[in-house]
Structure formats: C-alpha cells, structure tokens
Length: 486
Image (cartoon, one colour):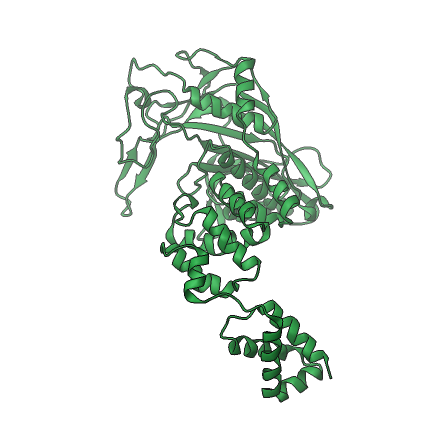
C-alpha cells in the first residue's frame, strides 16, 4: 500500500451457535438435513405463530461475552430488521436492537509491524455481540434457469460479533478472525466450519491519509469464507481505494463481493443505511433480562481460553506461536495433544507427530481427531520410543505408525515383532563407521579438505550398513569424531 495511506478495517462475524434447537422454536438445528425437513409455523413466519427465546443461545452469548471481558447488559431488547430476500420467509429478521446482550469487550492480537512501526500485541475492541436468527439458504441450478430455497437454516441461532475499526491491515484482519475462530470453537459454542457458513465474515474497509482522524468512505466486503480470502480480498480492496484516491476519484459507499477466480472484488449493491431496514421493537418478545447469578454461573463454567492455553504450551514446551495455535484448533485436538505430551514426556515430540503424521492422516481421511483410531496413551508410547532413541523416526513413521492405524497392536509390540529397535551401542557404531571410512577413501579425503557436503553420503553408508537400525544421531556424532582424527 502507498505509504501515505493507512487502512481502517472492522469485522462483522456471524457465529452459528451449536444449540440443539433453533432460536425461537423447537425445530432441530440441523442445516445439513434434507431440504425443508426442519421447519414449523414459527420459523416459517406463519400468521399467529409466536417466538420463544432459546435459553441455551443466551448462555452461549454470555460465555462469549465473558471470554472477551465485555459488559453483559442486564436488559437488552429484540427488534425486527425488515428486508426482502427469497430465503427470509418472514420478510424480516429478529435481531437485537440498540442494546445488545454483550457490549464493549476486546481481543488482543499480534500487531502488523509493517504498518504500526513496531512489534507487539494490539487491542482490538469488540463493540457488541448480539443474538439474532439466520435466514434460509438459496440454491441456484447450474443452468441458471431455476432456484430453490431450503429453510432448514431459517431461524438457526446466530451471534453477530461486531468489531471496532481498529485493524490496520489485511494481515491483522486475518489474525483477528483466526483468534476469534479459535475462541468460539474452544468455547464449544460453534463448530467453526467456514465452508458451510457456520462461521462467516463481512469486512468493512476504508482508507485515509496517514495522520488523518476522519475515516474514509467505507466499503463492505461480504461473505469471506476463509482466512486466505480475507487477506486477499482486503489487500485488493485497499489497493483499489488508494488508486481511486490518487486519481482524485471518490470511493463509492457500497457492498462488494470477493471473486476468488478473478482475484478481485466486484460491486453488488449500494450499502444500506440503518434507516433502510425500518427497525422497530419486536412486539412478540419481552426484553431479555440477565441476573447476576446467571452471569456468575456462566463465568464458573468457562473453560481454559485458547490464547491462555497457547501461551501455557509455549512456556512449558518451548513451542513456536504457529505450532501452538494450530494445536489449539479445537478442544478435542488440544486435549489429545496435551494427553500425548504429558504421557510421552515430550511436548516437542508430541507436537511434531500431531502436526505431521496425525494431521496428515486426518486430512487424508477427511475426519476429525474424535475418530482417530489410536488412543492418546498408545500414541504417547510411540512418541516416547522415538524421543528416547529406542526407535528411529523413519521406522516409526513407515513401519510402526501404519500398523497401529490398522489396529495391529501397540508400538512396543510392533517394534519387538519386527526387530526395529535401534542400535545405540557406541562401540558397534564405531566399528561400522571405521569400515565405511576404509571403504570410501575418496569422500573421506574430500571432506577433510573442506567439502562438508559429502558427510551426508557417509552417514547414509553407515546407516545402510546397519540395515537402518542405527541411532542416526549417534552415527553423526561418531562419524564427526572419526573424521576429526588424522
């Protein structure tokens, strides 16, 4: 971006809550069921049907509010937001009005040093989080001749989280969204599936001259369903604003969509103002009252928050930030990692396997850690054998891990059956190293003359001579000692 400008970004994130039933009726919260199989007069907006607020959705909103250290409003109200889409059967959406259940919280994220001039955490304000109902979902045939509406999602509970315009780059927006994603998944209030729309983001972006206090003209980029698309769309939109301003042209206030195939945003419609929605109080719902006992009960039920868990792992195991964040991707994944780390005695070793072979297996199978066939205790034993150098990593990965996946026994039994235990006897390895040096005088001379790159060749020869059962680290040590001698 032109150094004379800065971006101003605020996120609006819709979090689909994992309640059993919908927001204002007893219909099952199951958007993936056969089309229109979970509907009733309430979520269809039929005359005479009356909404009843879902208490579990309220509890989840309280949980989020406490996690971002927000003010829980003792009284909040519901309003009708009028607009007409084919997938909105009522012709309006029930949402919270001027006062939301959650207001004035914050998230701390890594600041973008490129735009802020220094490294460190920055505080991003959460202006509000309010409860509302989702709309249905439109499906368009590929031939463009017909469209269908599935109302299973109509009335599903949403928590809309509105961030203040405190972000200053596309990278900060992506980092903020990731932090919020980890939080709602870690709290157990949302499954976080961005592709299916249960966690979706709209971004408001403007550009102004560095040092100016007034905001530029705001553009909303809708329905960004991946962290990568958030970065790409906002980088593109920021650059587009700068080009327009440099030409002396005005930025139009509008709603735009991200076209990933073209790598650009495209205009959709002019941006609505609040008056366009013709808000008025929902006459069929009383004000929502929250008493101090409910707030305290929600506070006592809070789990360890993802960012605190990440920092604890970094302190205890010396993990990098990216490693720890990935391990905290879900409560189940985090719990599995922690069990393996504790039982194996190696946080680093457990992290390497979780981020490597375990994640690869889950990705290949399209499953989650909940269905992983190896118990944490068994996985910890495999990690321990590798970390204590009883078993080489290559043999563990290629010959033991696949057998464990197939239900072929525990790591120790497989190692014993296959005779895979590493040779760690220094005298045995010294003898093999001596044989390899005698058999390869040319490479030895070149290494001693300074061509260190050939050392790997000799290591390979020693490992080969030991039929892959030698402790590779010890082989390197013994070979270096031998080469250092005249």
